[in-house]
Length: 410
Image 1 (cartoon, one colour):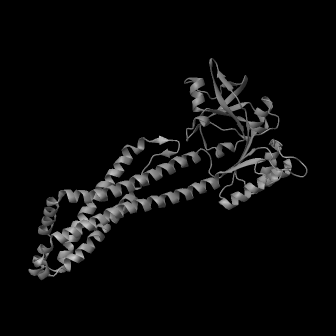
Image 2 (cartoon, rainbow, N blue to C red):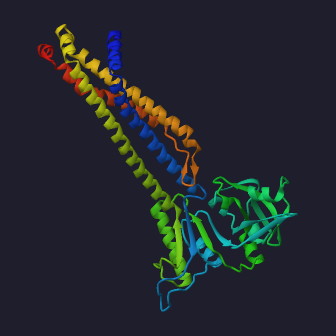
Image 3 (cartoon, rainbow, N blue to C red):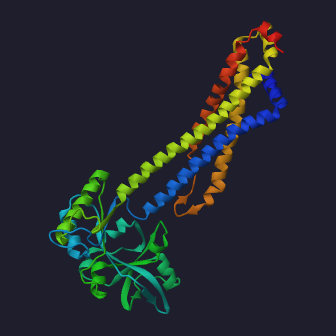
């Protein structure tokens, strides 16, 4: 393995056939480079989708109202379903398996917030305390809405850091009063949302009970959100069905009516994406391996040509007493050298491209493409083994050459 003469002979052969060696190595390098890029792109795509789910708990079931599309007990389709506080209370009380829950009353249209001479238009979400867990809100100062705020109809608000920047201009907002559509609310908390989505950050939160009373919301709600703890997908679907049945009984619509209310089971959707990305990763590996195998076959063919070109030389070696193993090792070493060097170059190039160019790519559904270092090492080991495999068949052929036939070879 460390025979100096043998290595000198290998390098001498490579120097004599630079173009052939380059083209052979290029096919292997291109294969491993594409595998790294494909794997990194797959991870980038998965990171982007995960980021979309990170904006709220991945075990949440969202429910919002619709319009009936099926007749039910003599009632015609086309009835609007308006969710109310009693629906939320009934679901929370009767459906088993709920971990966190909140309803939400939306204030559509332009909501003007002001503090002293600063003002702006922002989103106003009116919720219960559990909503902070559902939406994964991070409190920086103060606190989120609590149960006394709800029960005592307190005029308090939790604002985002973007709202703070727009209205307070460096002044500490805690304890100050902002005007929400002309009604003063005391700032009790400052939050940020790690996903940094603009709609989530251009937002303030109010106690739902206070907002319904102050802004003429009566008992209307627009959304019910519940988390299902550690429930499996099947268990979450069962909970989702129980919620639908409960609301169907309260509002007298067919539980199988798909348009009376709408639900979105984020756990089920998240698991679908997990399975989808598993399939994508498998597809990428198949494509990557196919490309690498094409390169390995190219190396094997080149080594067959090398053996053919050196038939007479090998015959002379065997006539002078060279063992079959020494002939096999000579061919194997050359194949492994070309494959390993070219593969390592392609691997490093792929990682460098992902680290330099990929790290700057940031979009809604594509983020931070990268490759696990362990995967890169496994790929390198696979390349070395593949190089040995590529050289094995031509090496066996070289070892089987009979000296007398080799000397007659023209």
